Image 1 (cartoon, rainbow, N blue to C red):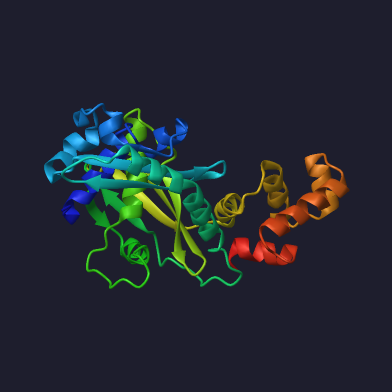
Image 2: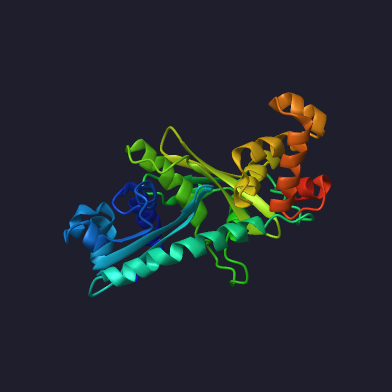
Length: 288
């Protein structure tokens, strides 16, 4: 059983361990893999297993990634104590990644609604972490924001576990260690159409890391919106122009396209996003 105080170290080691990490599975075109098989039975090749999972009695891990050409939408580690995952079990897990990825991306797309609940942070939301990603201090605004990140419907807990903040902090640590997973920032949906952006940065002095939490900008929301709805690169360019208020003629000049082609792209964007008009489309992106 994982104790809550172990969560920061678990996250840190997961990001620092390339073996069967979601980034490597995706890069290799492997939707799922078992640690026992990937390590040829030498689980100690996994830093995560050596530092955390061994002491917990974990004897195998089945990892899977949920990604498509639009992005990586999720990853999953299943632990087994006393035994290993069979090749049939891992194959089944891999076979499920396709439809689950489609469903996860569609769920993200549905978070963008026209009249999102307003989200205001009453002051700077900053979380300070030590080298082990343990929380040293945080502002009152950060505490309130972290409570919002708890799953909906769950009973409030006295000291919310900042999993979303740990993820971006661990991403920064991994990049500095030469095992990058991507940028040390992420966007997280809080429910009711509200999104926040978390960023990790290295500090000087006694405190090692700072994680900031801010209301996502319209541009940050638009990128997730476009990818979640499966827009092509050209359609994303057109969407970016629409967001400036440009009409078809202006977009045509900006992108060196014919006005007819621009209108075709706009119709395709509206259809993919199930939006009846440009105004509704932009309202969903902005959440207002």
